[in-house]
Image (cartoon, rainbow, N blue to C red; front, side, top):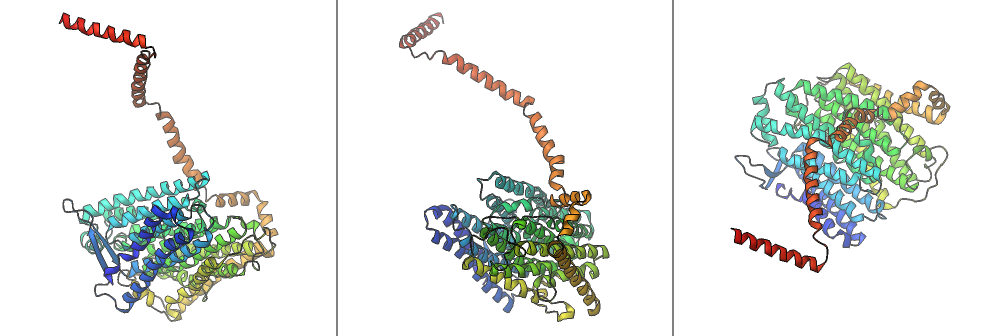
Length: 629
């Protein structure tokens, strides 16, 4: 089976190449078949690979296939080697399976777009780049995929480039993520200098033998890798690009949030977990950043009126939970929540896109309402996704994955009551803004007329994702609920559990508290936005609450802060610097060149007699010089 690994990324790459060079001449049906079929073939091959991996685990714990040697310079010979172990297996499954559903959805969603072929070409390249990222056996190849997803995010966020705001959002995403990418690149140089290799399995073996726990070099390296993860996964302080990234089509948002871009940072930290384990300081910083991010993004989601921006801030918050778990050393819990989040977040974005299309591109939830009976399939699937996001106990996947993280935040080896308290508050806020979103969108009076109803290419992916948003949680049940260990066993080889387990009755208590946070959030939203909306109006009459609302709505003022501290000073210096001494030198050269041009142009009068006279004078001068010499 390992000899066929290359086919998994090869299909999307082939689709990209075909659509790039021939897409404009292909009928739309063949564009859809090529773009969607390529990812579907990868998903089918991935499912077969996963079944073989689970039924007959390889002796060394992984599949690997070396395609060729990339370069061989002075002993540095990175190879194009594809690598599948239990960690990358989960990511490749999510990328291909959810990516295939998003592509199927896009067949109808993008049908009227004039750049149909360009859209599918970019989407195929996006999937290919992410597959290279998670299947790479060395950090250099991983970095190639890392930069590939950055490029694709730029192309797809700014897909409707005729609108200047979309181009700005694309540039913003590209530039902000470059900050983290630069730090990560430096980290790769440090790793190669220390270990003489960029092959990931070799690094994970050598690191504990060369570095002692707590050494400064381990901390520096881990923080450099963390910076790369913060940019791609939109965590503090590099989170500001993601809400603006909603400028792209809804399928792009679903792919970025569920299966590609923002999950890259989670994968990087999980893949390089040995280095982070050698630096308790770096691991604590990961947990603190994740905790702060989930709370800040949650409050911002609570104040948004654009349905896609609510979901964007929700993603930032949920990725924050994953970073919290990674910082706690609860590697399995982080990857479990990643998988579950991918299902319900893809569902919510695709359903939101269907709603926006049905209401003639209306994004404002306060202009929606009354859609429960008009769009029943979208309502029920959106409700299931929202229930999983809010972590409704026992019946949704989101409860089981988030409950693990909350439990480890309290009882884990690195857990503290403060981390648990903030994560608990985040769970309450999540349930509140999620219920608010459902109420404003589907209940109350209809404020916008439904103009378009979704077809099967849109509804079928929603139904499939809704199924997994409920059932995927049963892969890993808590100890006191039977504790099915399929997911833990799958990841145990590369991500050993480092957290403590507690007795069943204590775990049950914290599960009840988590359920209480969810139901309290649901009731709060029901009371404020459905039963007693006048309470919101009273709150808005307070200057303090209005200012706080605007502060949260602006993303806690990070954009304004960066504009003031970074952007404006750079622009100011650039304006001063545009007339510096160096520029004067080039301006002088230009002035002299223009002067010679004007002088010589005087000789071009267009009169043949003057040209003949000039020729005679020239001959006389030359002969005179000859005689004198």
